[in-house]
Amino acid sequence: MKEFLKTFTIEQLMSYEANVCHVARDLSGASGIGAFSWKNADGFPVIFTDSSEVYSTEKFHNFYCEVELSLKVFVAVSNLMVSNAMAWRYSTAQENQKNVNQELCDLYSEMYHSQRYWVMDSGVFTDDEIGQILKAID
View 1 (cartoon, rainbow, N blue to C red):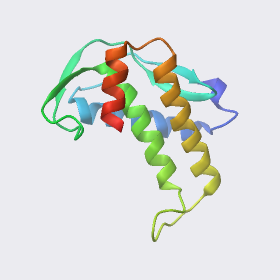
View 2 (view 1 turned 180 degrees about the vertical axis):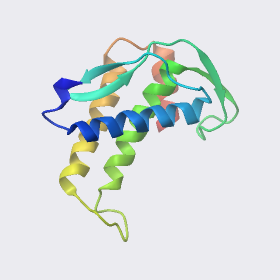
View 3 (view 1 turned 90 degrees about the horizontal axis):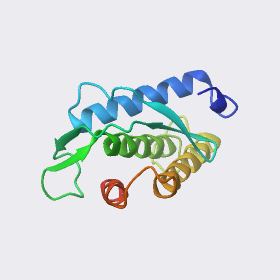
View 4 (view 1 turned 120 degrees about the vertical axis):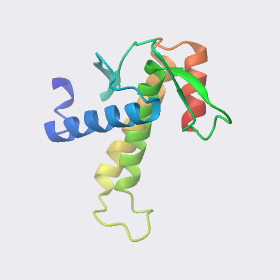
């Protein structure tokens, strides 16, 4: 985590971690995400678990029925959802947006795209897992 302190404050990283874990638990129904590590996606953090534990969900609208996914996939999706939400949180494109901050919007947008490329290019996900992740977020 220390390597990301040049870009983010410790409070931002802890908030990011808490949000990713919360979203992953909410989507999967898991009580927690277990052991995880911080990975580097071109200078941006990715919370990663290689857990193959499988959970069912109906919360992804891009899947037309209940789907079973590994916790590894849920956590990858959660990273992308949180970084995307943070970019929009600070975006000027939102009507009546308070706390607009283009610098933070750009930072989280770049983080999202770096994470997305990492998912596709890191070699830690199978082609099927990459397909599931992209289907869930697109």
